[in-house]
Length: 258
Image (cartoon, rainbow, N blue to C red):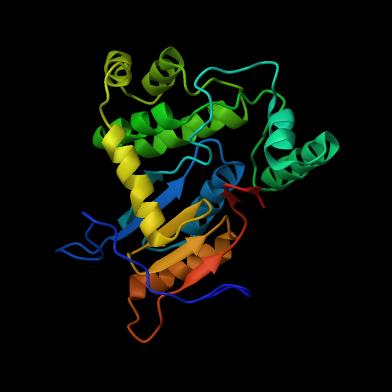
């Protein structure tokens, strides 16, 4: 399935993953996204809606992969430079246009049941948050951690670069706060974050969310649930007659969220 304007191409298998193999059939789903990406939050909700309609949803295994929209983002929040002003400065758009862009995004997200408060958003580095997501993967709570971080950033105005904040949020989903603090006081999981980002470049990812489903199909952007469901069904069936495809939708990239 290729959306108009999309293109078919072969999708590389993610190193270290096994697709639709073993005694129990399962479908592995790798998702590159950033906590600071509103389309990633929308894409997560649309994926959840697709999985609710997918008869094999219990066999789907999801891994959230690291992607930083702006690796140069500061660790400390600058309250004098809110999100709209930062977008205006970064992309050379009038402040009114930046405000209008955020208002449109808020409306789109609301249609998927999300309440975004960009006036509270604190644009900071997400590198440490991605490290915590890798810890959460090892502890079996990565999905809950991803959800908590997205809500914290986009709806609650939390500073997701702050170690104390990340320890508190981690504890809310079952991580040990002391372990989160220990990870962030070290360089643990830094290599895993960087390896995810290298894999993204190798796959040609230039916007997120980016889904690799079953190692065979890629979906770029927050596409409608029905489109995601179609790809899940194709990947499950493993039809060897269908060409691997990339399907493109709304995403965030280095040049902004479209």
